[in-house]
Image (cartoon, rainbow, N blue to C red; front, top):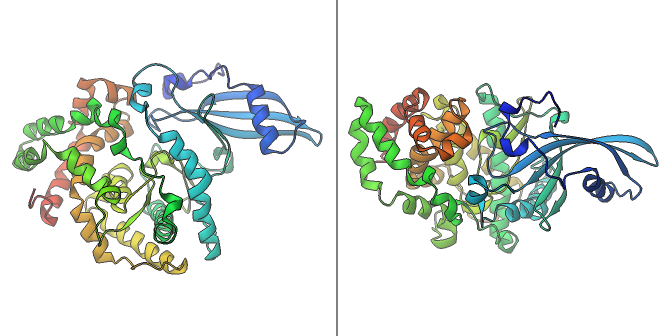
Length: 416
């Protein structure tokens, strides 16, 4: 690593590249991708690819490969993504998951087909950065061209703007629309996308999940104006994970005749997208893609993508905008199923309120604290005292004070 690297801003397990990530390995990759057997790598600079808080379910490096061919000297900026090899919480949390296989399948089967369908409809929207290399053995590795030199960046130290939100949800709507078409016409193409969070027992049994409701209830006890909501959450404390799972697994276990199902991104938060000006966005990190209700991405993004002020109306305006693009795209691509309606979408959003309860009580306080740089990711996930403190964060408490009355207004607390 370069001597000038500020190690404090990166994940510890990304400060030192593994021995196998060397000039010979990158040369072999480039010889294949460039179709140039005489290619030789002459220099390789490797640094961490992302900042603390950007991700947890992988190890990522950025490299610029200087190389020569018979045509001259060249350089190529690359992103190398692999799974954790160091023993510890991260490796344990991801053990036995299908994250890597799912992401490879997304890049090699689903996303290219999504783009092909859009192209046939006259839409040149780009949904993903091509993967130039992937392997499972002897290790799990994926390599992509780096978007940063192309002008893309992750939003970190400022709020996402309304224009950027519209850009994000327009692209998500197109993604969902073409996946809805495929589910209706060629369901076998997407049948293997069946692994979401509910198929990750190590995550569901992790203290960050199992202690979420207890920490939330303790917070309600300490905020006088919120204590009146405590009985509602005490009612669902014992089976919240099960009820949340009923939402996420609905397509696989209990399809509803009036449900809208798509291939969701599954981890649709701000750090999993890169922006180039406010009208261009590229989604990344497709490890959690799976078939589920359309609401899974919408609700997750409500808490993990939007700014607090943008979600206090439960994202009404932006979700209605999303629906207009979804409907328009379905028509353009020749969707032959029953067309969704805006009223039907909101009916499903309200029906899936237990996913809101889970996100509010479990993921939002942790994500808000990380986003505000109050705590580091590993502290939040591994230290119970730090995790409990995140529930009393001023930003989070203010959010809850706005959201719980809204839940009450729309009827979320009825028939718990």
